[in-house]
Length: 350
Ligand code: CP3
View (tube, rainbow, N blue to C red):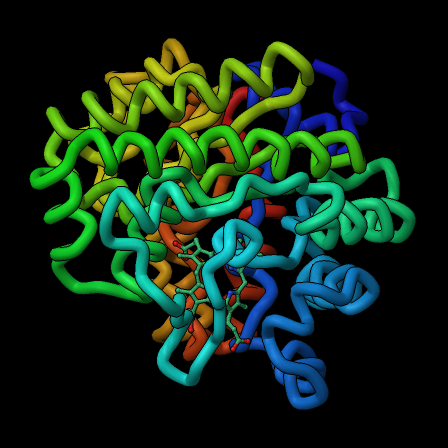
């Protein structure tokens, strides 16, 4: 281990389960509405226009880096941009995303467009290029996309959902059409991620926020093969770590590891020791503090951070994070306490 590793080198080493002197850490949704500086930008521009303005995406990406002192950035964007590029109207209302003309049958799935990411969705890659100029070589920068299943769910439901009725009706009623939708998303997401890597991302995270709603057998049959194909396709062209996040993943860890991801990002319901025992010999693990632990007080947030770091023990492949995104009601002082606590922490034996 090099004691003078940069945070970027430490992050890349942890992705490969190599020892580090300092725990790499970042927070899912680290840029967002809990920060007054983000609210100030949003006061001037709609969320979708923000996602399509690379200069503003750069500035918002840098807010938690500069204000909280984080060393890993995730490019500011949204997982739903590819749905719009495939032809579905996209809007963000007060109550969350709305996708027009929900895609509910084979004809609607066949009518979707394939897109060239460099032409139809150039913003995340362009934002990465601009952010790299200011974030420097010593800090890491991540690109991302939504997983095929989570995007399919939004496109079929038309927005958020409680029981995933429509996507599951399609899965059980017309599995061939469901598979076609997943395949078309998998193919299009490949180019969407590739241009982010070519623009300078150090790693790519695939967000399957809704994947945990599936039974193990259905994840194995429908989702895992597409995740494996997406990851293998990227790995053929690019040498960078891929992080697979599934919210509600405790029944799926082995299948997630089978997909070839370097890092599994896990939610807070799984005990770290159990995740390490089940998949720690194959993957690094990112997570997994409960985002609600940032709602009480800085002291409580710091105590829970220490407990989470201890729970990962001397596992070399740990990247500290939350088990889900920062909530909009999070006091900035609590996020700061988390970041400071991880920075002060020294892995045992380091
Ligand atoms: O800092 C970061 O993590 C990078 C930016 C980022 C956003 N969305 C910004 C955002 C990332 C990585 C995402 C991913 C995303 N988007 C996911 C997967 C992660 C997860 O939380 O499970 C999902 C499911 C979406 C879809 C989406 N976009 C929803 C459900 C919402 C509304 C949620 C809410 O909190 O209201 C969005 C909008 C969105 N994406 C906001 C931000 C900062 C809030 C928009 C605003 O400013 O009003």
